[in-house]
Amino acid sequence: MRAQVRRWLLGVLAVPGVLSSCKNDLDQIAAVELPVALPDRVTTDAEYLYSDSGVVRNRLRAGTIAEWTGPGRRTELTDGLELLFFDVNGMQTSRLTARKGIIEEKERRMEVLEDVVFVNQKGERLETERLLWVQDSARIRTDQAVRIQRGQDVILAWASMPPRTSARM
Image (cartoon, rainbow, N blue to C red; front, side, top):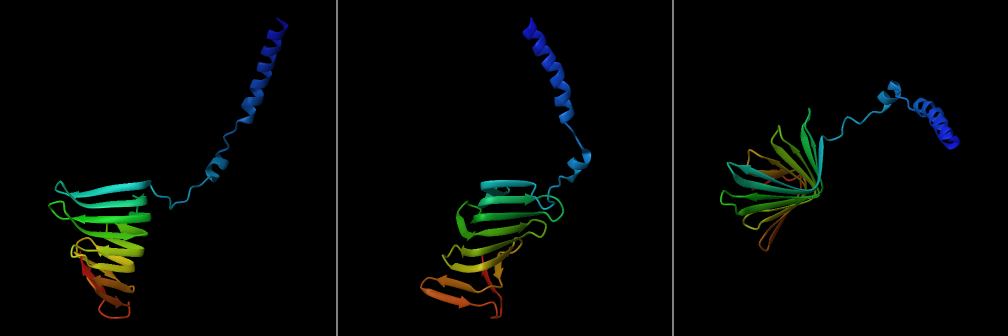
């Protein structure tokens, strides 16, 4: 009986101590801020398929895809990316790889950066450090130095050489 009284007394004395140690100071809670620039969604080892009228037109793979849905809506691709283009019959027509990229959905444009390689249906290979693709166009552009390989021929061009380098997708 004495042990029961001791446990009860210990429990009664412990409750106020526990309750007084729990505080919700609203000023301290408000002081915890998250950076505004955090993405709304992050996907790792991702594969996205884009279709038009039920036909897959593009397949995007990336190590990390971070998406912002508010003002300044954009998608950032990091840790390597691969974008495959398909025709209406589902046949691959071209391939784009890079270390990172940015998709600005509202402007319907994609920019890829670092170790960019684009290979079209003819097997022509373009290498550069920056490439811009406006989705309404079948053309890609760059303002960086490029290396284009067509069969055994190799063409080197620099950004200072007019006109800007472009290629068909």
